[in-house]
Length: 133
Image 1 (cartoon, rainbow, N blue to C red):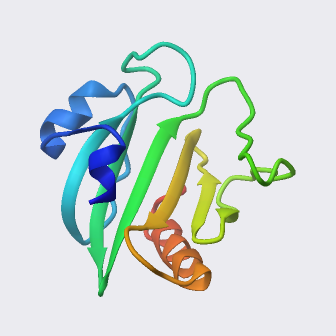
Image 2 (cartoon, rainbow, N blue to C red):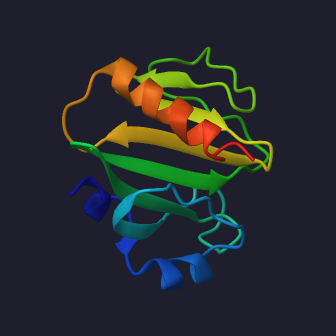
């Protein structure tokens, strides 16, 4: 699974003790949860993220989230991305990102093959379900 390469896999109840914010967990069948390294700064609970791999229909999806820090998120191939809370942007062909009103940075990508539109639609579904609070 993709999540195995992202961080340290552990049960959800343990993972949430390794971060300092209230994680948003997607509805659905959770497959695995991992604590993931920070986007920047020291490897502390205040900077670490959490990743959740879950099943959505036939797709396995990986949702990753981190607390936003005082730096700009720039993705290698698309340096002109501007983040507005709840606005979905593509950071790669089958990966999307957005920020939340509670200052989280979120990414979503399939574990396997999915069309860019399917990933974008899933992100919009998650946002409607509360992933932009």
